[in-house]
Length: 395
Image (cartoon, rainbow, N blue to C red; front, side, top):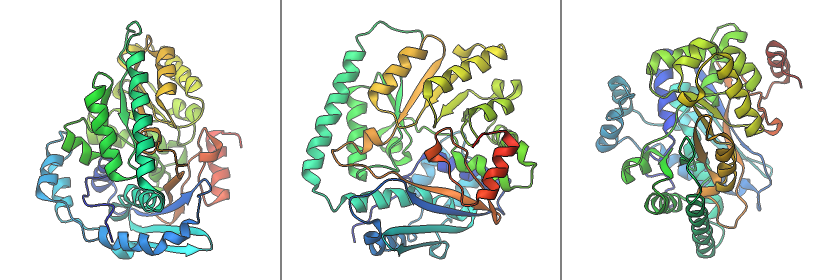
């Protein structure tokens, strides 16, 4: 068995930032995370169940090494008591199960949220790499390098355009959908070397450390969804989540995710207080141009100069789409572009569209009402209907 994961830093930064917040503010929360494949794989994922279980067994033997803890402790927003918690942390095998259900692969992590929330990215990286190990590797890498070089040439050509008010900056967000761990490392290393004027960081904490890049990330959907089940009035869950974030990080990690119940519902909660405290917003579903215009209109309504804020786009981007969005918005606000699959798994094979989402919290359903209908996720239609009603989101 060749391990997919060999370091517990080989995950997204926002897993650590959300993890720390939950440990400090809601350590008693129970949670359930469920694996879902949204597209049709070339062969049934159920065939991978034995290998997935082997990889999970291995993952649960890992712990944070002293040099990894030292790196995390050096990030100014990571608190010393959280590092002490990580020093003794091990994944518990009893909290996660993988089994075949017909052609489908079912993976469920269930237990204390501070013990199960970090499984997500590792599970997705495992399933992806195991899946693609069954394809011819060398032709895929040859094609991947060819496509990566084309992206670099595209960026160099773009760099000849007249400068705009705000710079073009993009990041690697590719851990969860990558072809393989070593391929992600090659991609990120190449981008840092070839286009450092545009490539500014990665969400992968291990690569950020090893390659001396900025680790990128703040919060994901699971963070805000958790607050749907923490006893606050449902209508106020977003405000409660944002307030806890402000109190935890006090100016750091100031990009808020907007699409847990849709952009319109988010804006209604993102008042002058939050708009001043947060550095910007992240887009992850729906039409990005429409979303960006709504964000700028909201800042204008609050009489906030949008050039002091940042819009981060991260939904299914490629280089061309990022450049188009940059041209549209660059003279009006700061921008950032998180590109995932198109960087870490553009090798000529059809990528898997897999997620592992929070589905229940404290034995209550939680949901995401995405601005992209295919991304809406909830296993309780009654709660989904109620959430729509509370936030006036049409079906």
